[in-house]
Length: 256
Ligand SMILES: O=C(CO)COP(=O)(O)O
Image (cartoon, rainbow, N blue to C red; front, side, top):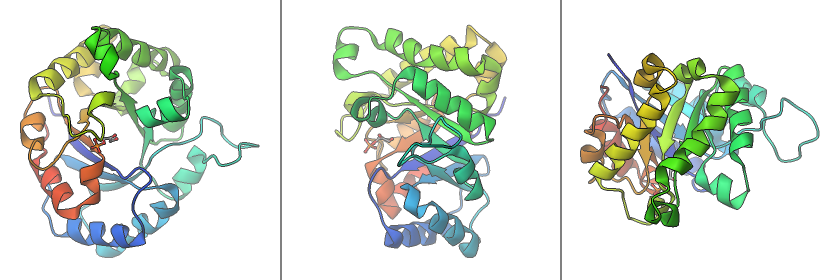
């Protein structure tokens, strides 16, 4: 069984052309393991520039471009939204869907997130589906119920078989941007739950889905997290804006 590792950079509403340039130059210098994919997700205005810088720099083929969001609609009167077809035209490969900031600040529901995953899959984009519990939900032992309630609508909408083309990022909300990482044991336990939950629907598919951990991952804690049996890489926020830190995190990832 081989599962590729993925390290994805979520720049959130940070970065600029200069960062696109420094990041591409920095990543051109590192030798990624063969079974590791790196995905950089800047804001929409930089997708095209990132794609062209990557081609010009002739960097490893396992470096990909991702967006941070996508519309569930194909086209029409949806001011400010970006469709899957527009992303395809820019040769974007991945799309982050259902990030906790989208869920909490922009009120995206799990049903809407399921529609977005469906739209991405139909367009041939790989969704990075984010799920995670809040601090109070963990404290009241609702973590598994919350994760199940975020996963089930997507399984219902796209069907479990399609999950072979889905990446899941487990990001406990209390660990995002706080410096409080889940311990590697806690992260592994939760990843194992997610894989078992998928396995109840289809064991073969569950074994293939890359499960990424996100929440205050840095160059120091990444190795221990990535060594866990069900952790296949990370979704990195703050540390993905610093070339050296992000390069070290990419180098720590190995497929399983
Ligand atoms: O939300 C995250 C990535 O999507 C995690 O952010 P931090 O790595 O800054 O905690």
